[in-house]
Length: 202
Length: 202
Image (tube, rainbow over all chains, first blue to last red; front, top):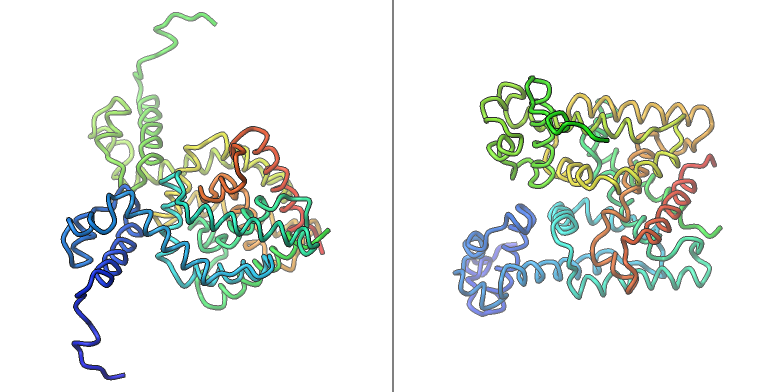
């Protein structure tokens, strides 16, 4: 598509656009360096605004990190549904999402690793997931001898078995490229089979 | 036991003892700050030796990190057996080990997250694990419609479902303390049940 270059790269004139640029810059910075390593002045520079504006829009570093995490929560919810508590569909979609979004993967890792206090949006999101699993258990679609929260926690972690595998394990299969399209497809099928085995009603 | 205090806390006179102290200090430092964040002078200080000695014994920061990782590999192998490819026993033992060793957990997380090049010991260790799983598959003790490496990678990650769960999920179950002894016992039982469901021969 050909567009005038002035339209393709608009200068952010309004607060909304500036905020979006800064949030995007913060997401990059936190994904790269984690919460402790991230630097506010680098975020401001990346976002093309000054530091004071960052404080005005988002508050301090904690608030800014929370804003990034909330945004991430929303993106994952939109991209990774849990239709009627179908954990196999969820696992496949989350694997695809995490594969396509290394930044989300890094952020999720830092997030779990560095900070213990969840945001309200995260808390709400996970509660909804667990409630959906519990409802599917009550409807007889999922095994119910494991509590909904444990079942969900295990499936969630399973979706990262390959993408977060220790480097020494990834190369244990010899010369195959562990991240080739074919290899990933194979692991994805194994993941879905494993989730099915875990969750099917006894 | 009563011993003269000079014997209880011996001053490290020989190279072996100094090396051990420095390796211990390095393990603490890398677990806390990761590879990028760790500081050689802090390690020397923690280990009660000077920086030059650290270089003499271990080489540069990369070599030192490798030495720490190899030591960790050995400790995990000793504490978490995989008897005849019994992945349920393995999962239970690894859960217990990781629960009892937050430092090992942090190191493993940094390790996967920060550095892509496995050490020789790590590579060998994981290859042995995968070979053991493959042998159990051949003997009909484990399902064989999922490759040994995928099966092992999934069980490995499953053992961390609770200990590495997102904070927002841990608190999704309401007021229960997610790390109380009872709660952990419940999750451990769920973990073993899930692993059994995944690995049992079809």
